Length: 315
Image 1 (cartoon, rainbow, N blue to C red):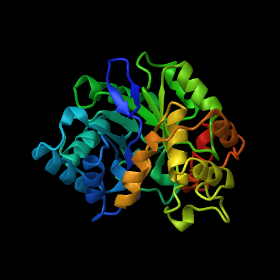
Image 2: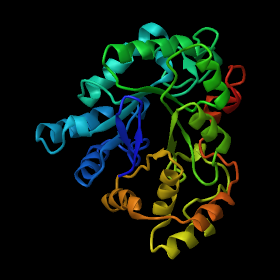
Image 3: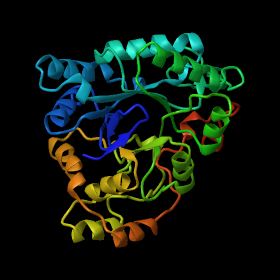
Image 4: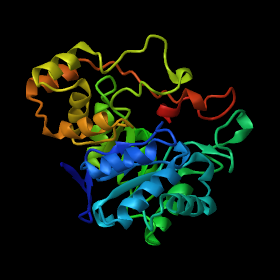
């Protein structure tokens, strides 16, 4: 398994199991299938609403000594309603309690967006807090404190543009170690990846397969399918692989981590087997040509008429 190496020597497995949209009643079994079939990286978030079930699965496997905690990489994310400095560590401790862990390997600020405390998702302008009211630096300093306390080993962000990263880096000596963003052949984000590489910030690709199972209200009309894209299908046939395996290996070949989600045993195992696939230069060039600057996760769910986040990816 390829890994992403951190400055302290820790190594994060490049392929992880994503758990966004993994249903209660299925996600725990998916985690157990993944970890008993070679995965060592699980990506979670408080807002996914399934960390308690994931925690039960982790507890069972760790208690049975089927895996060692030090061999496991668990990521979670701070939700938008807990950005004030006094709210960050309590939110983290709740995640640790739910996951039944003493520490996280990686903790991320989920979005550069702030809600009033207790608002799970805004329905009106008044549910938001501006970044003047709760600066990212305030949240970030609390993340640094969580690391100092040993509650997390690494800290980072998610859904941050290069501008937002640069703004934060001007204000802190401890820069984010990770930026988790939407990355796939329809949204290749070359400039953001290059910025992160130049600044020693790792990247994790979410929605690598196109998140076809997300809610209908999040989908664009006639949106394109990564899994049916002719270039991807052609490369898959060439290597006797699945389109999903090509998409996952493409992400790894670019030096990023990648977190495909599945609760189906066949797909969970097949996704990890993509590490055996070798894409050649011709394959990578062909994939480079299908860039569309198309987002599956537009951020439009944060748009209400008067809130300050109407251009989330331009902030």
